[in-house]
Amino acid sequence: MERYSTRGVCCVNIGSACAGDSVKIYVGDQLCVESEMSKLRDVWEETGFQLEYRQRNPECVAQEQSGLKSRKAPQWKLTFEPKATPASVMESETKHKVAVIRQEGSNGDREMLSCFMSAGFEVWDVTVSDMLAGNVTLEEFRGIVFVGGFSYADVLDSGKGWAGVIKFNKQIYEQFEAFRKRPDTFSLGVCNGCQLMALLGWIPKSDGLQESDQPRLLENESELFESRFSSVTILESPSVMLKGMEGTSMGIWVAHGEGKFHFPNRSIHDGVLQNKLAPIRYVNDSNEITEAYPFNPNGSPDGIAALCSEDGRHLAMMPHPERCFTTWQWPWKPAAWDDLEVGPWLQMFQNAREFCDGTMQS
Image (cartoon, rainbow, N blue to C red; front, side, top):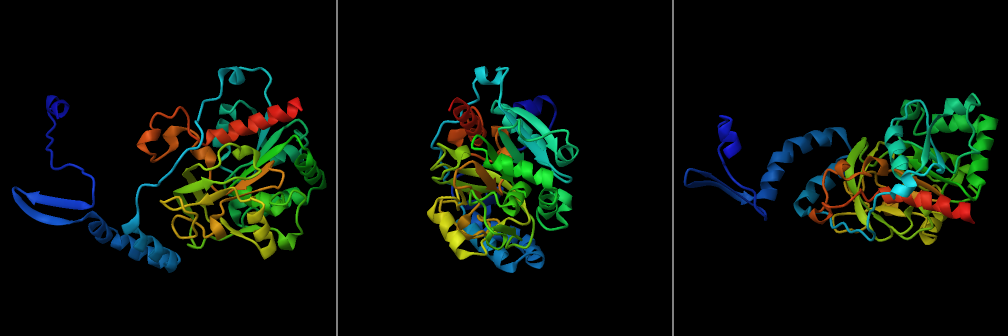
C-alpha cells in the first residue's frame, strides 16, 4: 500500500482471501452476500458450460460441471528427490548422442532438445527429410525421440502421414527397425510421436504385433482438442526412463485431440495390464486411477496415458513431460515443492542417460 501511495496511485483494500468455502460481501457495515464459494462459482461458470454443451460431448461436460463441487487440491507426492544434472556430466566432452526427430508440422522439438541437453546428452535436431536425403543415419545414436505436434497437419489421421513416410521407404524403415532391435538403444514418443510409435508397432510388444491387433489412438471422448495440466501417477514397469519414479504422482501438460488408447484385441489390453506395460495413468484429485472426465482428458481405458515395450527401452506417452521439466513451467504445485531444484520430469531424461551409461559399460 505504501508503494502505491508513494507513486500517487489510488489503491483501496476491499477484501481478503481466506480458507474454506465461504464468501461474504459487505457494503459499508451491511452484509449483502453470504454464500458458499462453490455455489457462486457454479453460477459464474453456468454460461460457459452452456456453450460447452453445444461444442463437445455433453456427457463429458456434465461430468466436469457436476464434479466442480468436489474438486480439491491434487494430492501429489514425490518418491524421489529431483536433482540437477551434475556439472561433471554437463561439462564432459564425450556425451551420448540422441536424435530429436521431427516431421512437417512437428512443434515440440525445441522443448525436447532442451530436456535432453539438460540431462547431459549431445542432442541432434534431425528431420525425416535429412534421413531421406542420406545426410544422417541412426547408427551413431543411442536414443531417438519422436516429438509432438501435427505431422502433415493430422489431415491423414493422427501420425499416419508420418508413419507412411517411414514404412514406405525401405531404406528408412530398415534403419528404424535396426535401431529398435539394438539392445543399447532407447526411444521416446510424445503425443504425435506416441501415435506414430503405435502405428509403427514399437509398443507394447518388443517383437511387434500384427496390424489388426496393434493398439492405436482415437479421438478424445470429449470430441475436442484438450489442453490441460492433468494429474498422473507413475506405476511399476520395465520402462528404463521411469526407473525409480514409481509411486510418484504429479501434474503434466496434455495437448491432443486424439489421445484415447484403443485396443482392438482385448487380450492385448489384458496383457498390457498384467505385464505392467502401462506405466503412466491419469488420476483424480485423490490419486485414484480414473476414466472420469476431465481428470482423464481423452477417455483412455484404465486411465492409460502411456505404453512401454516389454524390454522397457521404448516408451510412448500422450502427455508432454518436456513442457514441464523446469519448475517455472508448472501453473501450480504444492507449497512443499517451492524449493525444488529442478522439475521432477527431468528425472526421465536423466534416467535415459544412466541407461546409456550402463549399457556402454556392459
